[in-house]
Amino acid sequence: YGGASSAAAQKQAQRQSILEQAMTPDALARLNRVKLVKKDRASAVEAMICNMALQNKLDSKVSEAKLIEMLERTSAGVSQARGEAAGKISIQRKRYNFDSDSDDENDDDLL
Picture 1 (cartoon, one colour):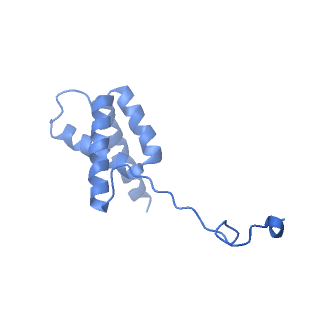
Picture 2 (picture 1 turned 90 degrees about the vertical axis):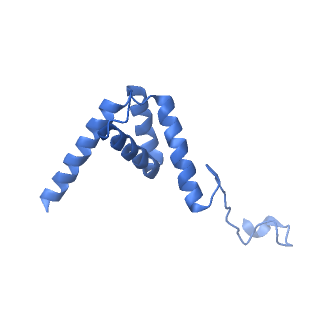
Picture 3 (picture 1 turned 180 degrees about the vertical axis):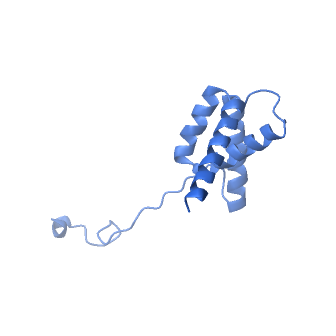
């Protein structure tokens, strides 16, 4: 039971070590900020960077600009898979019984 969690922690530590070696400090800081908001997108980019590093496909450290480009590519791929526009935010407001669409313009009943 405890062995599984320590193995996962060891794998995460190894992944973090690879990221630290493969990325500039600015890019790593940005990735950590993105991870707070978009965990799935950050995980996809982390996996991409780790795989590239392990296959020796990185000719230099991943800069912040390169990271942004990778994040945009993954966001376009994720949203296309869902059939959405990239980065689209839709707002749905709740409708209440006392909204303005009722004929009663007298707000005395709300007090």
